[in-house]
Image (cartoon, rainbow, N blue to C red; front, side):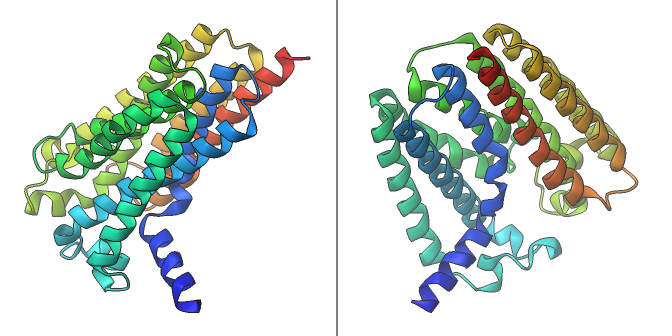
Length: 289
């Protein structure tokens, strides 16, 4: 039993389970906005399980697909697949289990979610190979996480709505922007392996420009999503804080100083998703009073 829990901890470290803070709040935003309040415990729990499962599936798939590169990259030597703490076979089993759990959770939501679940799994896996052939890989990753608010919305109300399109575009540009910044630390390695990240393709200074452009779009689309939904002042207070956090993110690192990349990548971007969710919840609370 102790060995089993040890493996679970290793798997959680491999997929960086704590990074669920990036996508999960946006799935909740889509869910709460579609319901215009509390969606019910069943919807909330099923969506939570689905999101954690699909994110774990995508991360484990990515680790497996990138294993040959991770073995060569000095920065990634402590990853469990590289160090041998977890085997390739165990990772494959984990991927399959996550996929099954995801499909099952989607089935608990509604038929539309169930029918779309295989497409979501395929799209989540494709990103892992995109860096081999296009510098747009960062935006492809963004499009994967952009599914979060869309999934949250259709989990409650399986119909098209402009709100989740705008919010999804905001998420796509947000993720692409911080992924470009994170990729800056691997620019030399990516070039040596002919991997096509934006920093490797265009250089660090242009890459920071792409990231800034992406985050300007994030701010615009988050504002448009709030306007399309009819959000009130408390949402836009959260939006203003998020906008400020993104500005700070671009001030604390530069093409010449990446020493605070982890602060920029994890801490600040975790704040972005949580603050916007808090703004949505606060807005919905005051509307019901």
